Amino acid sequence: MTRERGRGSPFAPHTAAETAAMLDAVGVDDEEALFDIPDEVAFDGEFGIEPRGEAEIRAELARTFAKNDDLTEFLGRGHYAHYVPSLVDHLSLRSEFLTSYTQYQPEITQGFLQALFEYQSLLVELTGLPVANCSMYDAATALAEAARLAGRVRATTGARVLVPEPAFLRAGKRGVLDNYVDGTDLSVETYPMDDGNVDVEALSELVDDDAVMVYAENPTVRGTIEERIDEVAELAHEHDALFCLGSDVVALSLLREPASVGTDVVVGEAGVLGLPTSYGMGLGIFATREEFLRQVPGRLVGASEERVAPGAERNGDGSAAEASGRRVYTLTLQTREQHIRKERATSNICTNQAWVALRTAMHAMYLGPSGLVELAEDCVRRAADLAGRIDDIVGYQAPVHDRHHFREFAVRCDQPAAAIAEDLEGKGFAVHVVDEHLLQVCVTDANAAHADALVAAFEEVA
Image 1 (tube, rainbow, N blue to C red):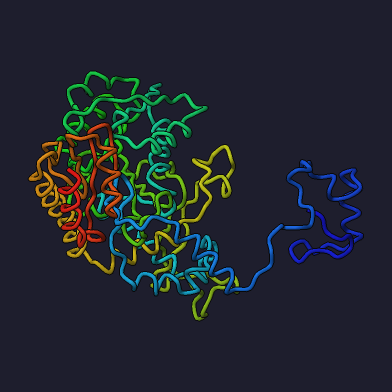
Image 2 (cartoon, rainbow, N blue to C red; image 1 turned 120 degrees about the vertical axis):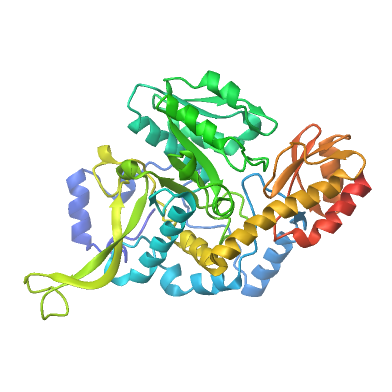
């Protein structure tokens, strides 16, 4: 925290006299008096890091990384890996994209703004909902923001948010939701599942006029496809609650359009395209109805039309402007607290996800509509094929749920699941342990080439 008096700073270029005047105004002798830093954590002038050359540092990092397990992952449950074309890296790593932060100056960021507008348009097409934003952290925060939105727009005094039972909602997602509603009137309650899908009859007994939102996922966290999603939406709407659907951009290309089944808000992961599996880093989807436009968290990119002065290249002389016919893009709605009065803000989202959204848009455009659908169909076909092959092995039942599956499925084991998973790990494969006798396997185009070896490993460890 210390710096030599009078030297100034390249980030705060005050003269010694200006610094002294400011310190005198607040009644302290030096800058250190403005901070209360415990001695045990205060910087003493030494980092304690031995200086080394580049070669030595690279060698040390290589030794550290070598400690990682070299496993072929068949993991899912919300984190999915699809092959990302090298084109996405080559384009997104261009300096004009990589160094861009929030696109506050539209006159110099038209290309990036257009890419974000196309990303939003992609979500609109996939969901059927007219409003989609371009700045959500991940699926968990998107769900939490949907709950907060429901609490703001609900006409009555309801306060209950209904979500799937713990076995069918990732603990991390539930934790974020609980954190977001803490301090509000909202409460989170659960409803039961039946053979991997929503127990609609049980849910009907739980939904009443105190419910502000009902949340369901399609596919579920165990990969099952919801067969009565429209009935879940109807139950919510019968009591004036919002219906929120969790999904991802690949699944949405194949499943029923959310708007057609009465969905009010779609949340989930867009980062299944454009990003490798990162187990934490993501890109949240948030799409909703136009009536909730000003309740959407984050920001929206909009399209407008350039206006120029008659006979002038730009309207800079105060003369009347007229439309040029050229489309332009800008940030049109920013409801976060940095941009508007804090009491009117809908959220405190501040980190810019634009570059991640850019990669998702690039990957989606690379695939095209038919390629995206083909990828989704492969997710159904590969899951069914791999589940059938594991089911043929004595000691396993797959899939556990008598449903169509997307990417992943549960496997029941005669032997303890943890022991099976440990043995599989010894043969170079990682799968989820769900409970005492339940494993979960996820297959995509990223690991499908290793499916034969996984089946052989399952057979060996049975």
